[in-house]
Amino acid sequence: MKKSLLIIFFLFSITAFSQEITKCTSKNTNFRSEAHFGDNIIDLIPQGTCITADKTFFEGYTWLSVEYKNQNGYIHASLLIDKGVYLDKSSKSYIDYNSTNSNVKYYKNVDGKKIQSPTYYSSTPAGATAICNDGTYSFSQHRKGTCSHHGGVRQWLK
Image 1 (tube, one colour):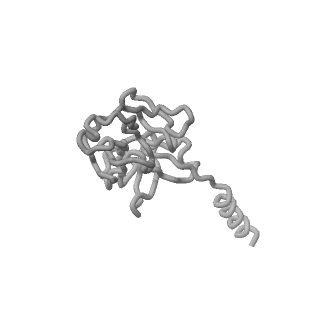
Image 2: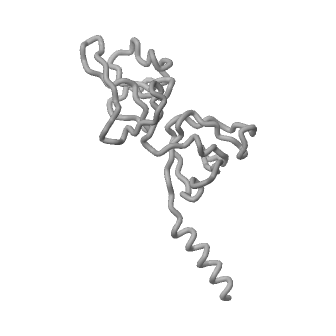
Image 3: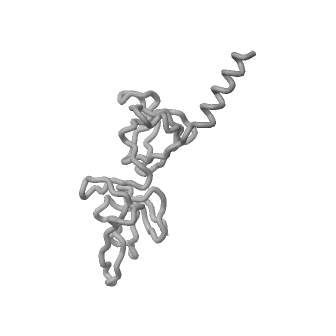
């Protein structure tokens, strides 16, 4: 009886004290059937997709077992970054767009208006009009030329 109570307490303590952590894909990431680079690719997880798991699995693990689109599989931990931090392709460095020291850039459109340049976000930001093929969100006011330096338009939002 004591042994079974000890096991129940142990299982409860693991559940009660586990901490979740959220990380996001730093680029389009292969979702694999097994924890090896050579294994089958189940799907491609888009850049900026956030994944939540038990914190212990992010500390010291190379491959993470995750659920994506109701399927179980693996992604390589090196392809995950903190939520809100994205790769600035021009400088090849990571930028935290949630910080107060934002690196958002602007340009003047054909009407002379100040428009935010295409920027990486984890979810659709207010005012975005399109998603570019490189995963950035465009704020263009005209369709002509939208995402021209970002691989073209993947999807129009407005």
